Length: 275
Image 1: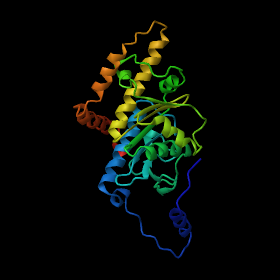
Image 2: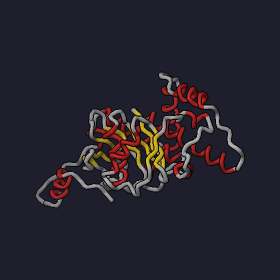
Image 3: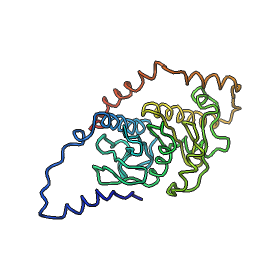
Image 4: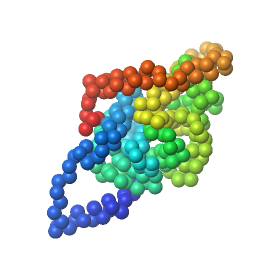
């Protein structure tokens, strides 16, 4: 289901049919938004392309959202009908916490399920600058396992006692589910939506992507390790906790180096996400 337009957008559409109205060509979006918003749009579009590159997409479904700089209740999300590999900075739709579309260059609107899940997280967590939700094969497989994520690998130990779970309630189109999503997420930055998929968040797009990368890899390794049927080796709890704390140490060098490297990867392949 596509979300509704604002009254302003509806009025704009109605006026388009009046022959007496002379409209000037609109300037490119990059020239109409501030520097910070444009930078957020470019990084968010890059995040979509990276998720596509790693194969965690689900056709035109799933979403990644980013809060608009300086706006508490507005965020950017993908247009409903575009593949992740097609997303550009200009094609991202600005939407508010009530589901009203503020700006949509594509005219495609947004998917209701994406609005429900992402608006729930952004409203409950003012620190969530970016929210990523995936339906990857391994992520869905682990979401269907009763024990959830196991600390089988160094990647998975990052989430030791640091991941939330939300029970499946059907397609996420019920506004009431937002309260339960927020309750189950709590102060965690990662969550497994049981029988559904994965979700991560972070104060920046880079941090949210780092978490989804580790969570996806953890799920892939868990499914592979269990597929062989051999006994599993689970490290002691104190080792898992110590490993998780090491990942949380501030000012890690990787926080300055990995995102520029990933952008270089995208630029070599297809820099159109910057448009």
